[in-house]
Length: 138
Image 1 (cartoon, rainbow, N blue to C red):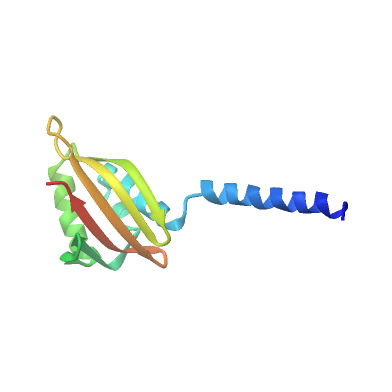
Image 2: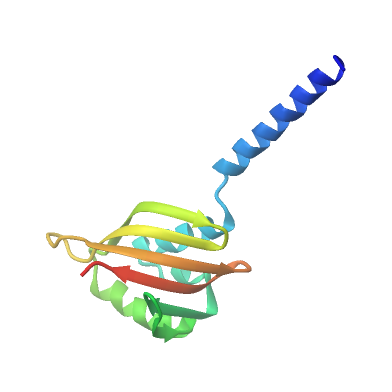
């Protein structure tokens, strides 16, 4: 029995170290959300679209479809990136639960104008963002 205690303690330490590593390594859903956010802030349309599925659906919460498809998203964001040189999104808080990422954001469209408080809910399937639901403060 006494010989088992050191082994048991060693195993517990290994498991705890593994859990600590898992908690500090961003999940794929979080990586995809961050990738598109970084590209958004650079206004790099190709990098921005890379984490999205070709069939991505974009909604105003809870279920009002705004548009569907990466090419439509390209048109929407290319125009916005070109027309808003001050555009910048600051991540306020991020929650990751399984294949869902919820980002609380503060978005500046024009310097000197108060930022827009928004929430983006990303749904990931496989290795792509397949749906986005936006909630914007009114």
